[in-house]
Length: 217
Image (spheres, rainbow, N blue to C red):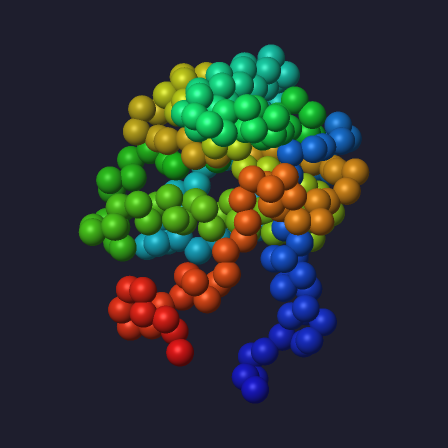
């Protein structure tokens, strides 16, 4: 047993928050405690990043009219996504995909500008900046669940239109609209699984050994 191992209750808490994290779409309008909000941002900021580039930027949306404009952008893309799904269009339109107007806080998570200056770890894999930002979002997501708050990742928007709304630099890139807030309850399972939109795959079908599609023994 490793000498660096956490105590059993601490380990159990880590696994519990991973398994209970949900992509939340239903929120209560109660405000988020500022101290808790600060802790969540700090958790995000302590994510790993390739070359320690820390590419994440967060725009807090405190203006109600701007929040409405963002919601309108998402609604436009929701309709276009439904059309692109063809035979599943009606099924998709019945799903609730965001809680922008209901949640306590809205953040836009984005990649910083001038990312070409960061070469360490990105010369052949420039998308590692996106991987780093995703780690920051996941840190915030897990910390939010531990604090009893829900969070939802909204990716239904046209990036250039959102950049224009937020006056973002041309070489920056918005990745996620994050809805954060109190919930009446957490979903027992991921909502898209509950709604029978998709099922969780078996990890054994996704794990290979040595070469692609070779089952792990």
